[in-house]
Length: 443
Image (cartoon, rainbow, N blue to C red):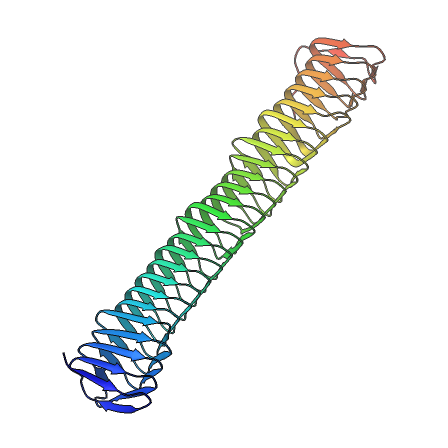
C-alpha cells in the first residue's frame, strides 16, 4: 500500500491519499478539496499534529501530544490515540474510539464505543452503544448511550437516554433522564424528570419528578421538586417531596417532608414527618413527630413514638402513640393506644381506647372498651366497658359496664346499663343511674 509522509514541523496541502498518511510531530496538513481530506488507509500521528480541514479515513492512530482536526472527522473503523488527546472542532463519526487522555468534539458524536481516559467534551449531541470516561464528561446536547460509565463527573445540557448509567462523583442533567438503571457515587441533580427502573445515589439527589418504578436508594438527602411516582424509597437522611407523589414504600432515617398531598403504601421514618396536605396509605411508623395539615387515612396502623398532630380527620385500623395525639376526629376500626394525651373536637371512636398514666383525653370518646390508667383525665365517655384505674377522672360516663378503682372521680353524670363496680373513696358528682339503653353517641 502506498503511503504519504509529512516530516516534523512541516506543512503540506494534500489531495486524496490512496494508502496511509504518516505525520511526524509538529506537522500541519490542509486539503486541496474544500470538502476535506480523504485518506483511504490509516492516518498515523506522532506528537502534535494539525489538520486544517475536515478529514475522512479508514482508521486513525496517534501517539503523544495532541491531534487537532479543524473540521469534521469521519473514520470508517477505529481510532486509537495513546498518551495523547484528540480535538475535533466539527463532528466525529467512528465505529470504535479510544483516546487515552482527552477527547474534545465541537459538534455531534456518533460511534459504537467511545473510551476516554481523562475527559470527554461534546459540543452537540452524542449517540453510542457504550461511553466510558475515566474523568469527566460534558455534553451541550443530548446523550443517547446504552451504557454510560464515568469515573468522575457528568454534565449534560440536553436529555440522557440509555440502559445503564454509572457515575463516580457527580451527575447533572438539565433535560430529562430516561435510563433504566442509574448509579451515582456522590451527587445527582437534574432539572428534568427522571424515568428509570432503579436509582442509587451515595450522597444527595435532587430531581424534577418522574417515574422510578423500582427502588430509590440515597445515602444522604433526596428531593423531588415535581410529582414523582416510585416503587420503594430508602434514604438515610432527609427527604423532601412535592405534592402529588405516589409510592409503595418510603423508608427514611431522618426527616420526611411533603409539600402537599401524598399517596403511599408504607412509611417508616426514624425522625419526623410533616405533610402539608392530605395523606392516604396503608401504614405509618415514625420514631418522633408526625404532622399532617390535611386529613390522614390509613388502611393499616399508625405508630408514632412522640407526637401526632393532624389538622383534619384521622381514619385508621389502629393507633399507637407514645406522646400525644391531636385530630379533628379520630376513628380506628381496632384500637387507639396513647401514652400522653388525646385532643379532638369531634371525638375519638374505636373498638378499644387506652390513655396512659396521668394522660388526658379532650373531646368525647366512643368505644367498645375504654381504659383510663392511673391518674388519667377524660371528658365524656360512651363505652360498652369502662375501666378507670386509681385516681383517674371523667366528666360524664355512659357505659354498659363500669369498673372504678379507688379515688376515681366522675364530675358529671354516671349512667350504666348492666353493672357498676366502684372501690372506696370514689367520688360521684351525681348519683349513678341505671338505664335500659345507652343514649345516642356523638360520633
